[in-house]
Each structure stands twice: as C-alpha cells, then as structure tokens.
Image 1 (cartoon, chains in turn purple, cyan):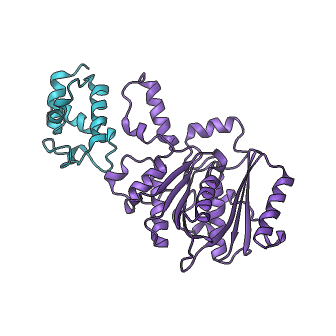
Image 2: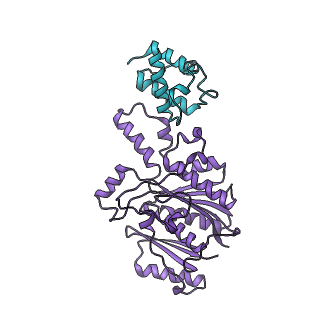
Image 3: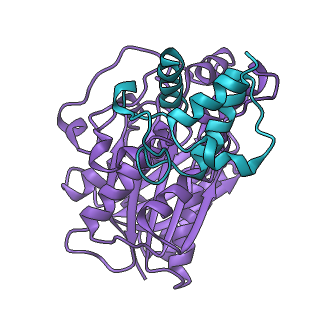
Length: 297
Length: 85
C-alpha cells in the first residue's frame, strides 16, 4: 500500500495557488503578515461566500484547486488540522457577546465559530458525504490529520483523502502570543494548504508518504530509535534520509506550518530539486514531535 | 420613510455581508427571500437580530415574520409603527 500526494495547493503570504515562491519568493521584514488572497469569485458565488470568513474561503479555494488538479472531486475522506479554527469569526462573536451585553448575537458568527466548520464547509461545497474529521492540537494539528488519513489508508478504509492544514492569525491573538514570546523572532503568518492523497499514484504524483509518526515527550534518543525502526521497516538505511531547511522564512510561522513544510518538500521533490528521501521533523513546544517520511515516486 | 428605507437597506447589506450590493440595487418592493435577494432561513435570523439591535423591536409572534420580512417596504412599515429607538 502506498499513499501518494496527488496534488497540493497553498494560500499564504506568497502568491496564492501557485509555485511562484520557489523562484521568486516575496520577502517580508515584518513581525506579522496576513495571507495574499486569490480572487474567490472563481471558486465561490457571492451568495455562498458572504457568510464565510477568510479561513473558510481559503480552505475551499485550495481544496477545489487540488480536486481539479488531481481529478479526484469526491474524496473518501476530508480531514483538517487547525490550531485555532475560525478564530476571526470567534473573535467577532465573543466581542459582540461582551459589547452587546450578551444580546443581539449574530447567528452566522456563532455557526461559523466552531473549529470543524472548515472541514464541514469543504464537504458541503464539494458534496462529499464521507468521513469528515477535524484535529485541533495546536502545533501538531496538521500532522494529526495526516496521521489519521495515513492509518485509514493502511487499513484500506479509504482510497482517496483531502487533507488540509488551515489557520488564520488575527491582530489581537498575534499580540497576545507576541507578549509571551511565542513567535521567537519568526514572522507570524497564516496557513491554508490542501493535499489530495490517494493510494494509487496518478499520472504525475508529487511524492509518496512512506510513514507518519507522532511522539509525545520523546527524548532525542527515543526519537532516533523510532526513526531507525521506521527505516528498518522500510528496508532503508538511516543515512538514506535527508532533512531540509525549514521554509518558515518563506511562509512564516503558524500552528499548521508543518503543512507548508510538506507542501514545499513535495513541490521540490516533484521537480527533482531535492534528495529522493526526505524526513520532515517538527518539535512543538518541546513535548510533541512529528516525523513525516517522504519519497520520490 | 425614505430615509428609513435607505438606512434599512444599508443595515441589511452590512448584516448579511452582501458584497457588491448597494442600497440602490435592492428593489424596495421585491421579495427578500427565495426571489429578489434570495435570502434564506439563517438570513431571517440575522434580520430578527437587526430589528432588535437597531430599532428595539422584539418579534414576539413568529407567525407574523413571513409578512414583516416580505420586502424592505414591509420591514420599514413595521419598523415605523413599532420602533422603540
């Protein structure tokens, strides 16, 4: 069984829904930058989009794009990872709650303020009635969603899956996190990355996902042990696996930035710009570790 | 009444986030739901909140909603007769 990245698309601080960032990345010298938006009228009619916050529009635009590129318009599963969910709508709802004395609360903001609004809106838009799930685990949210998809592929329960990492960052939340030193000098940004995965490679798959591992409170030694075990299982040597410099200087930092790391690795791998085997690691807050093993197809 | 109708149209556009729609685009007598602006049940909830927030009107009888929200004209008429602020 293989799990293949059939298509991927991003909306970020770089030009949206394209790979311009690879040759001509936009440089920023700011602590916080919101994403550059595409023309959503190409994806959503105004009646449908008027109730959607930016994160929902981005999720749908990237999802529709990968569905189009891969030809998989009705995936078996839609799985989303998000650190904060629809935080902008949540803020609107909570502000109204405070400012209006818990009266006059707008139903749309209430409906759209839950984290699983993203995956459910994608499903409604794409008319997908299959498995639908959302993972909210801060800095390892995306990997949690990916791991769910990977395990379901392994069990043979699904053959295609749309997996996304989606987060928005609002000025107030940026400031709060800035005060506690969360950003560590990195540019705060937003994330919208969708991947279409399948167990049968399409004509030109971007990469193959060989393994996804998540560890909790693992020491460096334990992490290395696990990597070696995975390598042994895949009948590869440890030194067959390269790492890549982070793309956070290009895409910025968000709770789901690891989606950008996988996206960038897949794009580069498809173009033959990097080694054939890449190990992506994420260490979040010193307690959560994720390992994604990618190979060239 | 003309001022009320104009203000109401602006408030509806804002509350329902009707992008690219101006007050002049909304026919005062056209149906708000299904036809005309093509609003739906969630929009109806937004309009109920709008009426209470902007004009202090609490709709006690749901049975009357259909007639009150038939068009901007019927909404403005109801507001002018029942507004608390």
